Image (cartoon, rainbow, N blue to C red; front, side):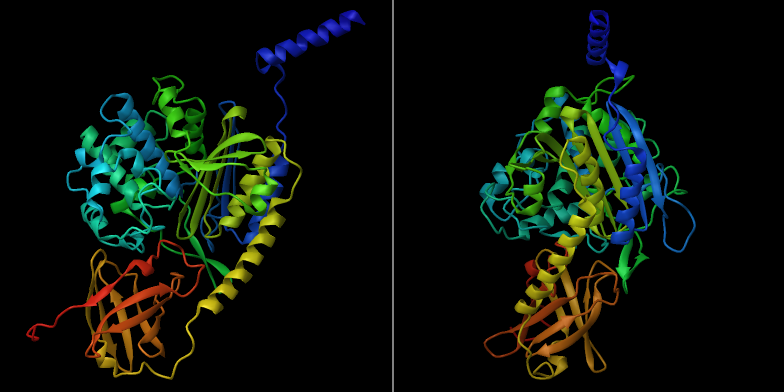
Length: 524
């Protein structure tokens, strides 16, 4: 008996010393397969790729469904997806590399690298640091200025930087969290200024290539091959329909990378290894890596999800979201472009990474798959996240319908209240530029400049009040248009607001303030 006990104890020590008796994954491959299949059916997702990285190895990598509805090509672990805001961590890593090289510091002033950088407040402009670019605490509103690149526009990166000075803050500097994209575009310009290379070249040469991620690219025109690429899908008449990928070259550092599960596995393995790269020098130091995973902006928590996952804190680091999850620290981020949402998550204490890439608009299915996996690895109670999030989605949609009805303006008299020609003119907004309203027969048509995406007829619903319904119905962002008058009663401008609270925050119509352009030859 003593011999048997001694042998068992020695075997136990061997397990502690290395992989001699590595634990079985808490989720069998078949369990992951089943969860993905249920999520796809429940949330109408055309295609999914899932990866699990454990102890530096990609132990699960599979694709499900199709790359594009109506076509036979299947999703696999090499299928490229647009990872959206998961690009932000790559931009942060680029700055981390430059910080280790002494070419910048997190708390350097942005204007020292970009003298043309301006915000509305001169003091904030002078005090704004590289760290502030990455932590969503600028004082600007949620998604402020996103209409400069959504839908696709022809604004340049420099024009977007110059537009920032016209965006009005909604809170004091560094006081509140409000997610933004434009400032990550500015961060990409800091990378270029400090390195002497474009953000695209730096990320490709200093991150993607050393990590063996050659199949991935910082933009469509940087992909070695487009033979295996997923198409985005949005819901149309109750079913997913493919739409063109939103290319965002002007704001690329915030969300333009395209990659696969196999490619992102290298990225996650490096992150979990604190910057170390197998067979090569570290990408960045462990201390710099820890800085990126340190809370910078505190987030509010609450609700059923936090209760279920025993989450007591949440924060934003440098390009990463941070929280406790079933007693473990979780480092993660989601990314979204129209018709495509993705997730990159890690539990450093377990040396675990979870990747979920989808070609659908709905984020509930994405979260359900990721939570089902991470819950199992962190020892949470066995829960059906697919059912939980399907129920939560239904409740949220009902609440949004009620909120939309409550905030809808009261029905007015039929017609606009004045001749249509009174509204037809060119109008200017300080940061978005001109828009035109023209008469087309018995209706008015609104057209934004710098894009082909925002054109649509105005439907009168009351005195000086309309709804614009965009011609491109894949843009789920119809908006109220309210005209104002000067003291003489003449139309002198208009403001806008999304019709539905479900409208993506990047359609920040509420921040626009269009003023009628003076007609040539008019008296002053």
